[in-house]
Amino acid sequence: MTPEEFRSAGHALVDWIADYRTRLARAEYPVQATVKPGAVIAQLPTAAPTHGEPFAAMLADLDTIVIPGTTHWQHPRFFGYFPAGGSLTSVLGDMVSAAFASIGLNWQAGPALTEVEQVMTDWLRDLMGLPATFSGVLQDTASAASFVALVSARERATAYGAARAGMQSGAPPLVVYTSEQAHSSVEKAALLAGFGREHIRAVPVDAAFRLDVAALTAAIAADRAAGFTPAAVLATSGTTAVTAFDPIAEIAAVTQREGLWLHVDAAMGGSAMVLPEYRHLWAGIEAADSIVVNPHKWLGVGFDCSLYLVRDPEHLVRVMSTSPSYLQTAVDRHVRNYRDWGIPLGRRFRALKIWFALRDQGTAALQTRLRAHIAWARELAAWASADPEWHVMAPVTLQTVCLQHAPAGLAGEALDVHTRRWAQQVNDSGAAYVTPALIKGRWVVRISIGADHTRAEHIRELWSILRAAACAPPAV
Ligand SMILES: Cc1ncc(COP(=O)(O)O)c(C=O)c1O
Image 1: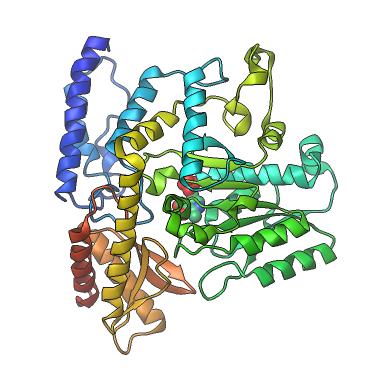
Image 2: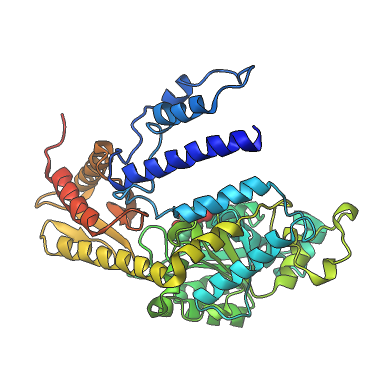
């Protein structure tokens, strides 16, 4: 494709995207994909075309093949999982990144790529009220950031012994502590970082789903008595199921006393810290060794964009650094080489979409948007609380509401069957999308508010949709 052909195809594509978002904002598509498994595969040729095809044919396939096979996360009545950043300016930022198609192997291979990232990570850190003692890097996902955090913890706990002798050093096993409400990526990170399933402690939580610090302290003491080496605590600011916040200050007191690494998974809840009135939820955060926040969740920046912040970048570089001759440059001592701050060598210009999104929106509008989502969540919870058949199953800390519809006489397994039935009915209807989840062994339905096109009227519509599905007789 020549630049002139690109101009014409690009204009058509931008029109297509604008039309798609306009129709989406009007809720013209069913939220959930309408296809059965294998339906998309069945419509694709089994091999790449021998001769090039017109761009118009590709655009047409978006409508006929891709749209029916897409669950629309930016739909105004998408309330599943978590909000996915979808601002159109961030789409444009990604487009420029793809157009440069340059790869930041080191500063010299992409000075602007590196330095815009440096400034954007500082902007985000400051926006969340974190001290300048933290330095940031963009990763693809929180999963990767938590993995890096645990590798860093492992190396600090062994004085770089695991890097030297691998898993064969014969030292006592290292132990990682997290709460039973932690995201599955935490367990995965611990497994991949070599701690082993037997050395991951899922500490119980209190009634508000926050890590129980007394239980953490007891678990550490028991492990020390057994000859193990406690290495790290992974706390969560905004758990996946109910958006609970672990008590960071109390946990930090333990990790400092015990000499453990403290990593805070704020993948979801961190976004709320752009609102000063919510920063008490992670009080004590300045004592963390590392933090991950996903701007690609609630801050409007498109996937993938995960902010990893560390207090000691030198330790990170020492753990991650490899410096083959072909990557060395004359300025290495004076610049950041982000390849040493994470797993991949190559990096794209991810910071552009943050830069575009923040400049387009401004921080005031961003804060207004987040405050509206929180207010709508409280409103929904209030409607449910006012109805004796509905229960709000967890504190509504931010924009997530966990609901159960429990008509008289329905309990236990039968209630679970009912909950899963009406949740599926909502999703299959295409009118709204919600996520069923287990809390304390019982099924609830999570409503996560924050899609780009959601407005107050969509919350009112959701409440009607939920009541209609929950009160409908089961299909035979
Ligand atoms: C608390 C928490 N941590 C981690 C993750 C994983 O995020 P990612 O997909 O960026 O790895 C999620 C996402 O669902 C999450 O809610």
